[in-house]
Image (cartoon, rainbow, N blue to C red; front, side, top):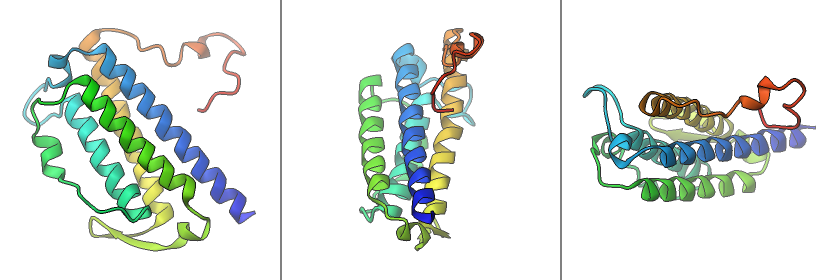
Length: 173
C-alpha cells in the first residue's frame, strides 16, 4: 500500500509538472519577445524571469536535492535578467529542466521519499522537496498565465471543456 501511494504521488507530480510546462510553453508562444521581458515595475518579474526562476528552483530541489546532481543555481541571476533569451531558448531550457526533473522523479523509490535533505537551509524529506517543487511550479505557472492574459487580452482556453456538460472526461485536474 505504501509503495502504491508513493508511486501515485510521484506519477501525479510528473503529470502536473508536464502539464504546467506545456501551458508555459503555450504562453511563451503567444507573447512577443518584448512582452516576455516586460515588467510592470522594478518590484515585478517578467515572464522570462519567472521561467528562469522555475528552472533554477526545479533543478535545485529535484535535480540536486532528490537526484544528487550538482547544485549550479544562481538565484539572483534569475531575477536580474532583463532580456537575452528568446522565447525558443526559454522554452528549450524549461523543457530540458522538466525532462531532467521528471526523470529523477520516475527513478525515485518509495524509501527515498523518507530521506532527509538540506536545501536552501531547510531540512526536508525528499517527499517534501517534491511537494515544494511542484507547488512552487504551480504558483509561478499561475502568474505566467495571468501575465499572458494581461499582455494579450486573450482567454487562454485551458478550461473551455468544463463549459460543456459531461465533457471533462479523464483529464488531469
